[in-house]
Image 1 (tube, rainbow, N blue to C red):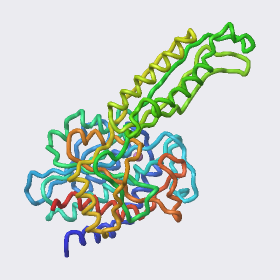
Image 2 (image 1 turned 90 degrees about the horizontal axis):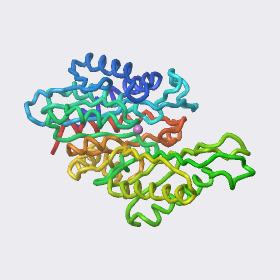
Image 3 (image 1 turned 60 degrees about the vertical axis):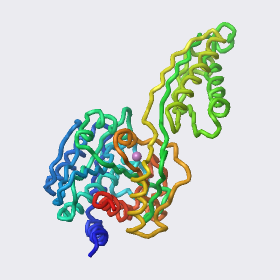
Image 4 (image 1 turned 120 degrees about the horizontal axis):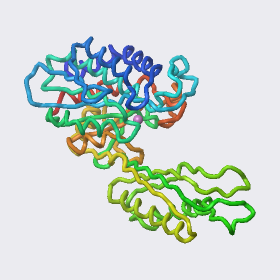
Length: 396
Ligand code: NI
């Protein structure tokens, strides 16, 4: 039997287990950097398989699976393990709702974790045919800056293991089970955050001439900020500026002393992000100076853009096609602007990130990431597990 057929058989054999593990993790979500019980659970599973593990960070861990065939080849497979600070909803997943109030797996990281544990099981069964070392990277804190991927790279653990290539995946509610989507080059945006406080002068709503109204200044700022993408950024360069939150004022008849604004900037390269950051500050400075107010401005650089190397992307697409047929691998025409801290690994190693279809109407799993009703179709594992296992096993 060919190795690919064996992988497919084993993935079927462990389907039930992967589904159960995901439901268990779904019921016990933990937010970024607090994944203590999740980490314990993963380590117990790795212990059962006899896979040694290392803990370069406080949460998360790295399983070190040694193949029987001696080789210097080191392949890393990464799954993020954290949940979001939110509550969930939805009929389809009611029986395995989160038991931890204020935390929920609404981005599918429970499925990523369970999938990588399934891959660990498949690869352990195929140890005789496994070459070199496979690092099973269970990464904490994907959802929160500075990013578990960054913290892990900062420890130098993976660099010291001379990783040849790294692969990561994400559930995709907009693709059907049985398909994947990816592309070479920029795949996902770089999400940066800004925080602004506009200081005016409080007063009576009926005596605005004696006040400096920060609500008017904030409104001017929000409108003017929309000209950055249309007037300052190269029109062929994708960019987003969104103000997502404004806070100011206490009553209909009081001019407040200050207003706070929070927003996000999405780009595909750091030069564009720098340009937008400086334009944002110019605009808030111009508006507040003109009115005699003042401001504070902070810009937090988030994750770099996910940028897939050609060889590894081709490897993902080819393996998918070998396993499931030509038409199952979709090559995306353009990147999406959501962020992902997988990009930090790609600053050190060749690597590819891809989306695995997890959305269907019958499992109510077409809600967008971070939606309270977000769910994953169980058939996700029948693509994700064999593909990941096969990426680790062969490099034609
Ligand atoms: Ni996610």
